[in-house]
Length: 294
Image (cartoon, rainbow, N blue to C red):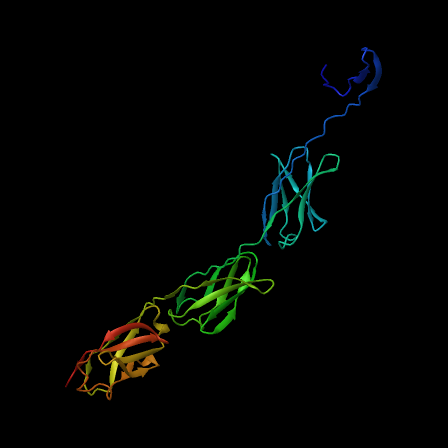
């Protein structure tokens, strides 16, 4: 006889060697124990968007998140045997003991699983910076980064971190594309967690300079600066490119002339003479100076 129903009457009988029944006892039937399944995915610490995910059997109707022995949150039960629990503000380090607990429809705890916690993979990126035109070094950081510092030529400057982005004013610190510039990321404890080198490019400005022909012993070379970025010109220099030296400099270019009488003579009049427009030390435009004698 098979036992198929807990309402069946089942007994066990004992017999002696003469095949005489000498004892009979009832068997108490119980329903089979219900099986409960509960899993939790590995959790990478995320202080902004962290969610604990996992699977559950359909007979688990409630899940809770327990951190260091304290229940922190009730999770969201989803169709299809899954669940989600918001955890960004509760799981903050790998030393915490975190469990997901499952409950049946009667509110009884039936399953518990520990969550494996992984540290945040720290990172920082930096967009390229155009020297002469860009004002700020900007980029992205991982969610554990709370401070960003720019470092170049022995100088440092703190930036502003907002969400997973940051910005550091650097126009006055980065003046040459040959500088070595780093941005360094720190976590809430003040520990450095990542750094990256900033790629520097030289900005291209729309500036043109022209010069009238110069006659030896005249007082000035007359020039004109044009282009949409002409206001970025901070000086014009008369250069002897043959001897690689500056002969004269004018800082106020509004007059459109540079003194040349004592700079150009019969010895250098046939050299490669040029007017060069600069933004500080950045060369923006050049033009050849044509020299003739009277």
